[in-house]
Each structure stands twice: as structure tokens, then as C-alpha cells.
Length: 282
Image 1 (tube, rainbow, N blue to C red):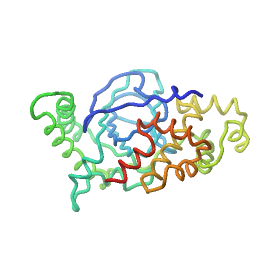
Image 2: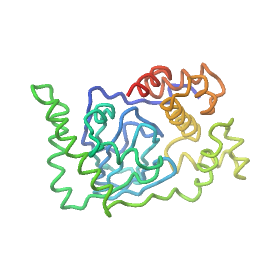
Image 3: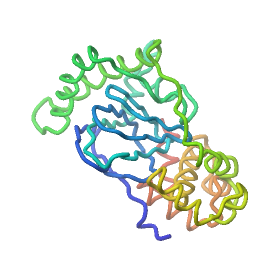
Image 4: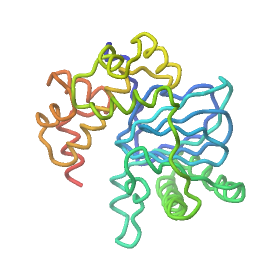
């Protein structure tokens, strides 16, 4: 499959925030970001996949993603759905966090794909939505002080989110549809090995054409997309832990060095060496 299948969203600046209503997400396939993301669901009927968890969202649900968690959304009714997305640079937030107040804790203190969901009741939404709309407005402005106002509002929101995720309001992990659960489990267990549609289908005793159709129907993405993005997220982890580019290529399941370099850059916007330098220098 050609590299053009992979779509990457590039966000400039420290914060990128939007309030959207649409039938499709800007990137409806499994994907991963270099920044961290806050996703606040307001209206619609969608399933949201985060790694092996799947959530049917309701108004006030909040999902958070770090830079190593792949995710995608499936619109179940092809109707307009409404959400707020806030992407931000974790390096900047890490620098202004303190020993007492780690603003990234809720993004990092959980296994990938587990514990990403929390919920705001209507009273909390009524309080926070005007503040978040200010954040969105300032993040899109280019006038004196807009950058500092954006950052100040984001810090307030992050303090609240960390308190929310530490409280009893936190919601448990979602469940992946039963039919594709063995597929995701098999791929995750064997991600560093050679994987093909035929091989996965044979391993879980499923016809390969049915598997391909089923995966696309349930997730809106292809099995190939899931495998490749999953390998890139694994590579990001190894690189951040100090592995060499060559070691990372092998450990994350890419069987060709040049393909690894090309695919990693296509999905992240950085070469593996650039990503390692950026994350290991923090």
C-alpha cells in the first residue's frame, strides 16, 4: 500500500484548539500525534478506539492521548457530531510543571489505551465551555498577549483535568467489539514479527477477505493501517528510551531499514534520528 495512505496533521505553535461539527474527523484512520491531545465530546453517536479500548461516547466525555497512543473515531450514524480538540506541545508543559504539580501526569500515568476516559457533568461543562471557547479564540488570534492568554487558560484546564482523572469521576476502560477483539490482541502480541493479512487471518481462523471487511467496518480503518501505525508508536517508545535507530527498526517489526525511515517520517513528520534527539534532550 502506498505511503500516501497515511495522513498526518501538523500543528504549529504550542497550542492548537478547535470546536468542530462534521460527519468525519480530519483524520478518520488510526493515527498518532507528536503532541498530546484533549478530546471533549459534545454531541453525536460515535465509537472512539484508543489502542484496544473502544468507547461509545456521550456528552461530556473527555479522552486524553499522549504521543504514543494510536486512536480513531467511527461515526455510527453518519450524522453531524460535535467535539472540541486541543493539541499541545508536551515539552513546553513539562518545563512549566513543578514537583508538586505535574501537568502531564494524567496523560502518562496509565498504560497505553487504558484509563483515557473521564467525564464532565453538565454543571462542569457549563463552567468550562466558555473558558475553553476563550482558549480556542486566543489560540487562533495573532494579537499582543494572545499566546500568554492561551497558555494560561490551558494550564487552568490541565490542572482541572488532572484533578478529574484522580477523582472518582474517572471512567473505566472501554470494550472493543467482540468480533475484532482477537484480531487486535493477536496483532499486539506479535507486532514485532512479520504480519500479513493472510497470516493474521489464519492464526485466528478467519477468512482473510471477511477479516479485511470486518476490520474496516468496525474501525473505519484498515488492518494494514493499524499494524503500521502501531509499529510507529512502538518505535517512538524505543527511541525515547535511548535505542539506536537500527535497534528500533528491528525491535518494532520493520523488516526493511529504508522503509522504516520513510514510513516513520511520513507518519510523524520527523526522521527517527530527529525524533530521538528531540525526545531524549528533554
